[in-house]
Image (cartoon, rainbow, N blue to C red; front, top):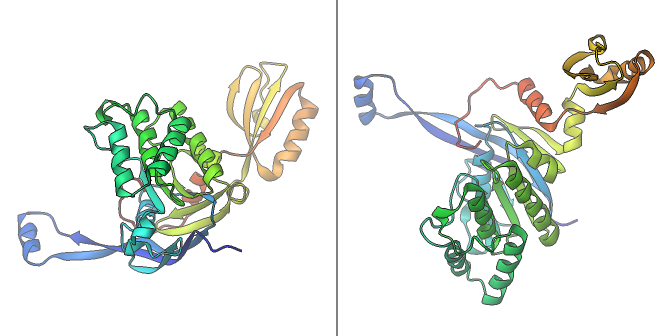
Length: 336
């Protein structure tokens, strides 16, 4: 069995946050005697990511996601615990380590605003000391997969958000990293562009075998890309396992979509009526009651079609957060 691409044991990060009372007197006093209090952003988390695995890293804003990714990519020094990425300690920022990873943050720019996209690409070629042939091969592949041909000669300032995000993803992958840390890579994009980015990442993972740790508030990203999810809340891991197991463990309801011949039929007696459109009713039913309720509907009504669905992953994640005991506050982060 191969070693994990990412190995985290007891990883923690504590910030010292300034504390000051209101008013001019307190402001002046803080200049002489500064007081702080510790705030735990990440609290002793453990997980592994195997080579080639794609893992969703989920949590609300302030949960510790971005702090964790910054520690794993070497931007932050941990307060405790151990992290290994491809066998390296990230915070040491060895050149060999940096050549094998990338960090894409949806709200941060790598491209230079006033120059053509291709010039930013060429700058990264120089930074990573990529041989000309390898650079050309990577550029051609990324241009094809992401349809960048018309964008490369344009100054970055002239790109739409979706076009710029495609180029941000591409420039991060020119050096063919073995590990991708993706923090909200589809944030702010329209539905069509989100789908294109997801399709590209899935194909990139298939072609290269790169490991991916992905945060996103768009559950479609997680459902399309991540067979496994890690859920973090207030700096602690609440769940780590297959996405399907998360649904099975935390969902207590099923959704029944029932089409009946009579458009006036009232099916609210069978469960919680979520929506009704003519003869189609959407019901929410307790999971353990679903077989019995389904049988009753089929026996009582003139059913044209009946579908039983699990709740969406978004609904399940909301349930996880609602049920989590979280008495302490955590520091705010721009994207979690």
